[in-house]
Length: 384
Image 1 (cartoon, rainbow, N blue to C red):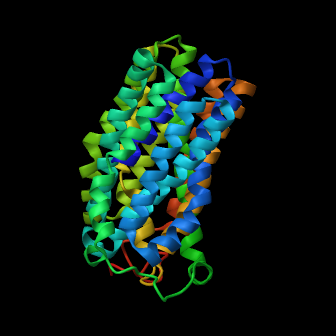
Image 2: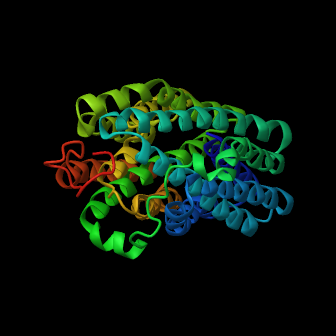
Image 3: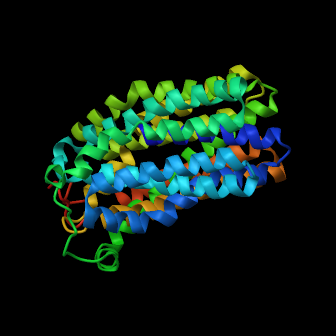
């Protein structure tokens, strides 16, 4: 929750500050997308480190990196430093996420996994709701520089939750890959489930991250104040927060596809609504529809990765999946920036619709139902 709080504050503050400073859509999208690039670049190291040293120590180091990156961005403020700082912030965020996911994968059986992962996703959505609302208000009240500093303070809140376990390894889950297969071996042995889940995750994440960029940009284009833009983004996350228990229940009781296909279908529909929205009310409706879809997909990518992860080298496998997923975190903002510069924000929303529809088709035809071991793509899960 602390890591996603810091990240969500940045994702609202950075585009508003950069656009207000005269930078264009492309430069803004590159800086915003740097968080995803950092997550993709750091995932390999994080996965192996988690397998070797345990989730708590990795989470402690990751949160500390986020604090340092935020402080540097706030002190310097140059666009290049903002990009590099967001890159480091992204490394920290993937460290927190993967270490928590690996911990839950080892502790939670498969028949409860959907609910556990949706709870993880839902708790992150709660902090994103707070972060997006506060990000716009803070830019109004104290300016972009202090808002970026506040993102680091948000991440620091998480340190007391993981430092005690990091200092007492006997409380830790057994590092699942210590003395086991290396990262290259895990990737080679699990290529099919890795690609099946990773490609879908990349498409879904491109749509999700594109949503985070395009909503503030549409708000700026409509001439809304930063606090109003933050409220628009937060409205969608309120729907996310309300629906995450439904996501976990449906995934565990009816199957992964029963939850994910309608959820991601609604996300695509929301982008179509946004493409035709020309008032703040229209943007609000589109944001809520996307929020409902995103809420119904809460924890879905965590669950898919954990369903097909091998018993040995769990965190390394999850890191490899995350690398593929995080290409979407880069692709989404860049797609919005490039298409918006060339054809406008409406065309960018249509492009995100196409990406999400392609993801749903991949989910149905390639991934399949991962909770059914006879038809899923996995070769054996740690929770089976």
